[in-house]
Every structure is written in structure tokens, then in C-alpha cells.
Length: 437
Image 1 (cartoon, rainbow, N blue to C red):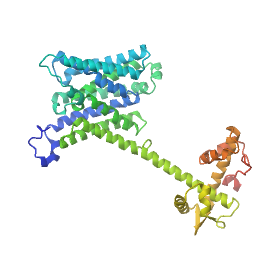
Image 2: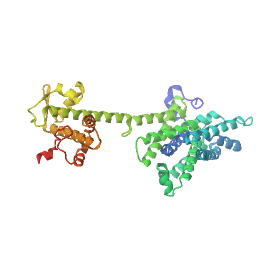
Image 3: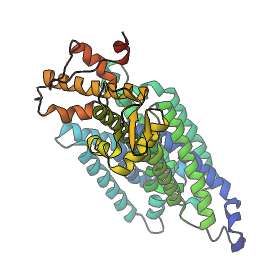
Image 4: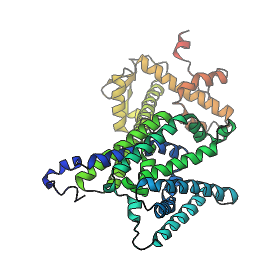
């Protein structure tokens, strides 16, 4: 990196990413990121993350043998050896797990550590004068990317993506339910080995940009982030490709600007995207689910307050004439004072309550909502007593939790034959439309 930036003044650090070598290495890394992201979707869906990690290490002996045979450090000379090693890895894992009691995860550990160890031994036995840098294999040498590497990646990327597009439906079927796919005549085993071959090709193609250790992260992390955002495979692959390409470009650019390791910087960007998605995903995000639980808890508290006021006032009391003290509501609704005051204020603005000093009452709309809650509670008590064997003494607390699912009240009412009282002898109120009739 110092060599590349020798003619650039340190104060012009923001110009570093736009040096003459930046575009070549960045485009190559972007193609690697896109390919890894799309291919990683199948790795994630098939729960092959451990296999992907194992494969990235297990190709070492194939790469070393290809290097010894061709005496070429270019990616093209190493690709064939890596492909053979990748297929061999898949075969050995399948053989060990199927012909013995060894589980698949244990088979993966045995195969990839053994092959990686063989690769290290092969490196140590190389003739004098022949140098194979293991650190470059593990962590990449982005500054070593040349036009031939870019050309190879420009071939591997569309080849892999084109294969995935052509075999989209068979790959999707075999990824979600391999048993059904096999029954449909889809060559599940052949597709598995094809996928392993594409993984091997992508690992080797991304050898110089990220190394075999970090390239696994570019496969898993963008695809996992995309998986949190959608349930559609096509959309997932599109998002994963965008995430992977963005991480590569942003990581390489920041690496040139700060002199940080490029592969590690790409992975940090990928992890940052995953963390953001993990927080704000519309359906799976931690923050989203927290806000949903909070809104649900607030909704339950609102309904409990309406029900408490209804019980204190009595269902025959005319609205606008009978009020209850706020202090009476808190223990019955099981809501502490401060949040209860905020909820009462909100319900008043919504037209469900009205307030006079420290007293509150139900409007017509508030009475209708309260009747829904009381009716649902007593119907659930009747249902649990009759069909779930819950005693009348224990049924109240369980009905307190289920009453907020009042959308099912009408169905329960029909199933029970429209009961008039609950197990405690309390009258089950009828809906407002039935009362009008």
C-alpha cells in the first residue's frame, strides 16, 4: 500500500481510493462480493455454512498441487486444482457420514482439517527456491490483483450467476425440500456437487482479494442479512448480491483511504449491514419486534383499563352520568399510576373516555369496546372450563391473557352454543348489534 501511495501527499488521504490501481482491485472485489452474496443464499438455506468454511480450507492441497504442476501463481492455474479438491471434499464428507455413525458436522471437521493439514505438509516439502505464501492464501493479497485476475473473475462471476439462473427452479426445490425434489426427478446429488464446485471456483477466484478465511464471511453474512428481509428466494439473491458488491466496493475504498487490510474491512462492512438489518428488519428485526411487543403491551393495558372502568361503573349505567376515581382503576387494571395516566389521556383523545378532574367515565364508543373485552373474557372462561378441563377457580387468570384475542369471540360463542353465563354465573354480554335487536 505504501508503494501505491508513495506519490500522494498524506494530507490528500481522500484521494487515495482513486489511485490508478484502485479501480482494478475494486471491480475484481465487487465481482467476488456479488458472486459470494448470491451463492451464499443457497449456503444459508441449505445450512451449509460449516461446509462453506470447510471447503475454503480444504481446497489448499488442490491449490498447492496445481501450483507445483503448473508453476503458475495466477488464479487460472490454481482453479482446476481447487475445483477437484472441492468435489473431493464433498464426496469424502458424504462417504464418512453415510457409511459410519459419524454425524455430518463431525465428518466436515475431520475432512477439512485433514485436507488442510495435507496442504500445509505439501507446502513444507516444496523444493528450495519455490515459495508458496500461506498467509496470502489465508488472508489474500489485494495489491497482487492484476488484469488476468480481473479477467478470470469477469468469467467466473457471470458463469456462476448464469448457472444459478438457469437452474433456479431445481436449486430452489432441492434447497427447501430435497426429498420432494428427488421424488420429482430432480438430480439432488448432482446439484449438490455442482454447488460445491461453484463454491470452490468462487473461493479461488476471490483468493487474492479476501483470502479463503474472509471469503466465507462474504458468502454467509450478506445472504444472512438478506434472509432477514424477505421470504422470497429471488429477492433474497438480489439483496445478497447488492450487499456483497457494496461491501466489497466500500471495504476496498476505505482500505485504500486508511491503509487497513482490505479483506477485513469488507467483512466489517458486511457485519455492519447484518447488524443494522438485525435491528430494523420489518419482520425479524430486534428493534422492530421490541416495538411490536411494546405496542401490544400498551394495547392490552388500554383494554384492561376500559374493562376495569366498565366493571366499576356497571354495564347498566348511562354514560356521561357515572364516573369513577382514577385511583380505583389502577389496581383493578393492574397498571401502575404513571403509565395509566398516559393511557387514560390517550383514550380520552380517541373518544373512548371522558375526564372530569380526577374521575373518568366511558363514552358510548368506550362502552362498546369494554363490552367486547368482558364478553371475550367470559367466553374464554366458558371455553377453557368446558373443553380444556380448567377449573372455575383457575380459569380467570388464563382468560385474562386470552381475552385480548377477542377476534375469536364470535367463533367461541357459536361453538359453545351461545351461553348466557360464564362458569362463575356472570352474564355474558351480547354484542352491541345483538343488543340493538
